Image 1 (cartoon, rainbow, N blue to C red):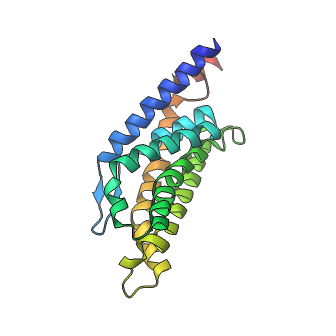
Image 2 (cartoon, rainbow, N blue to C red):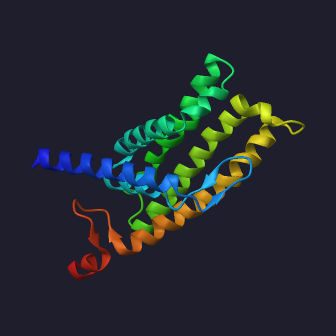
Image 3 (cartoon, rainbow, N blue to C red):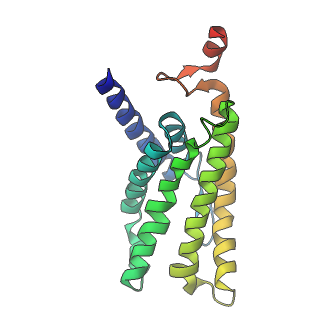
Length: 196
């Protein structure tokens, strides 16, 4: 039984990483200076974090970050030093997507699944924004021109992360109205109401 649960967790995680990757390639809006808003690309990672906990969610997010880094390898060519390469890898990919594991942090603290997932998604997106903000203040500061570097990074990253966070939080709340993620099998919410 334990092996079966492990295989289920690994399979679900792999499918959700793949789904997040596909959704990240679709865009709702491309912004003129870079960055884009995607249709719920962070939501599958939030679901995994909610279902299996923060630790597993962090691991899944880091794996997703590796996939995104491979897809965005050209970004490393903009680095002007070894330290810049390290900052890009950490703050634009591994940590930035790893923090999606925070999406499950409220599961045991808040009994309402929609509220717990929504707050988890908001916290995860805020941490992701923080990672990109740090990267913007360091590696991407050359694009600030006449603007203070911190303001450039704030405006640039907020321009896509605020809409992305709104889409992710709304998606988390909406999907939780229809599906129960708290059991080993994902069931429709009406099934849960019948059991009560």
